[in-house]
View (cartoon, protein in one colour):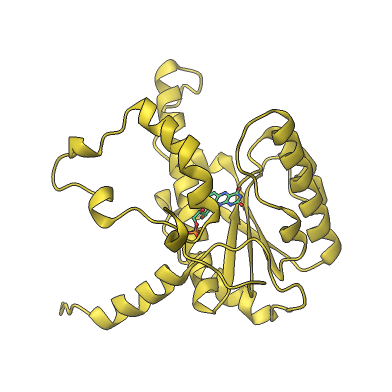
Amino acid sequence: MTFKVTKERYDALMDVVMNRMTVRAFDQDYEVPKSHYELILEAARHGPSGANTQPWHYIVITEPQIKQSLAEYFVKEQRQRAKLKMKFPTPDYRGLGAAPGVIVVVSDFRWTKAFPNLREEDSKLNAMYKENAERILLQSVAASTMSAHLAASALGYSVWWITAIGQQEAQDAIKPLLGIPEELSVLDVMCFGPSKKEPYKRWKKSLNEIFSWNTFDQAHFLTEKEIDTWIQTQRSKVMYRDEAKID
Ligand SMILES: Cc1cc2nc3c(=O)[nH]c(=O)nc-3n(C[C@H](O)[C@H](O)[C@H](O)COP(=O)(O)O)c2cc1C
């Protein structure tokens, strides 16, 4: 087999990777051509997954009324979080109702049975394997979803990855709206479209900060206190500011 390093393809990929940027307000008047949904989901289709289970299903929402109902749910949830004093800097979820492209990401946790586990469902030992199986499933769906986000970005769209729906109450509210069977779960929502304003690049850690050679470089270990401080002082800045404007 002949092997050739292809820096040109890497550069083309990095152009897409680096220019994938989250926006939360889109040009409401733009209509996404049907073929673009297919191009985006074709990328998702090729994602890797544990045991090649491909445990994902994507629901393309084109009906404005359904988008609106989803947005209303998120706005309600956002208020609830504020009331609970979570202090999480929540975005304006009304942007979802105005997003030209909306795709709901669905999974089926029954696929965890396809990953390594014991027959005795209730044993303590199996609980450990079950937990790992759930991680495998979530990583699989995220891998496929990321391909979809990169494909949308490659087409020139800005993207928005929304996960604020893990809790049971949200599942109960959203599943009937979309005719999703009880056994399945909504994992996240992908929005995309032309951005209303110029998108901005958010802060990313430097390359040296995110990896070590061979063994974990202890210089990168953060104490609980350091993490708490980061949340207090940095989180909202890195979520909502251009990296060039962070002091
Ligand atoms: C797993 C995951 C969950 C996210 N959940 C939400 C969410 O619920 N709401 C939201 O507004 N943004 C959400 N985001 C978007 C992040 O806030 C965003 O990716 C991050 O601030 C970095 O910005 P960038 O995407 O422009 O690099 C999520 C992103 C990922 C990957």
